Length: 259
Image (cartoon, rainbow, N blue to C red; front, top):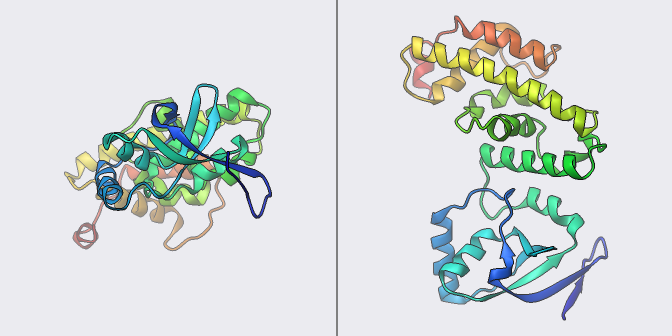
């Protein structure tokens, strides 16, 4: 069985030809792009399957952590075995966070963050949420993940709140059991703000979804000013004030044309 030595950390990597039917796509992977799958199928037909996928070994086979689109393309082409690099389990979450095969959108990142959070919660609830920071790009991905996955609100317009969330959300210095309750509270407040946003959007007769982001931005600026980098209010203070500001905010013709 061929092995490689990882040059920085020094751990051993196994390289094997694995049966396709033993490779699974775990739930924390993001949704497939059929366009990318078709493109990869064309490439594989021309030059062969030359880029190994990355997997970790599980109880019932292998989980793909980088290469699910290549795996799907291979399945559609009828390929029965694939070259794979088998990583140690502790590398899984870091590789997923850096996976660039398909550029993830905000919903993808939030879903992955939520899946990661719940897995660590089940395995070691005493872990502090701050310890997840190397594996989750932004803390607000967790809050959005609780909205989309815990509450099942898949249509939540997270993009509209992203700029504000970047300023006020943070990794929590709390054990995951306590952090879960805090994320739920934050998610609930954001859903309340979303209801006010949707109502104002309808009142103004807007039809372009991007105008929701414009309304949030203008409401935020009405409270904190333009080009503010840091706010003194905490998460709850900011979104409580934003909820009130959204009730009366409006957009000029020029602002409408920007989106």
